[in-house]
Length: 132
Image (cartoon, rainbow, N blue to C red; front, side):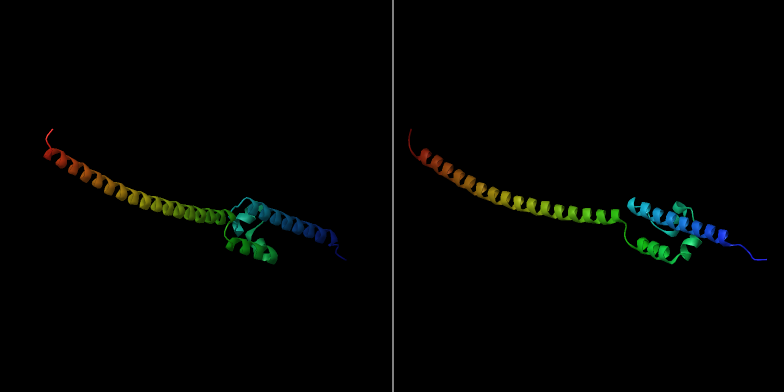
């Protein structure tokens, strides 16, 4: 008696395609929302088993590639940190320059003040020697 397995084969193929579609969509969603991507997380999101994911060559390679690459938010964070460091260095350089300028101005004013005190002292000595 011949076995009719066409229906079972079609059903298995549809389930397989649906699982592939769910896993692909789950990967896209996880990637877009910057979630950590690993086999367990994808399996839970796609409602498939981790063993099945490991058995699908393309999905396995994609998950492994995404798992190794740094998350986009980490890249953005490192870029932000780099910009903050550059900004901090610029602020420090500006402040050091300003301090140097103020110290120079302070030195000049101190010298002028000392000179003025000298002139005043000479004037007092000169006035003390002359009768009123």
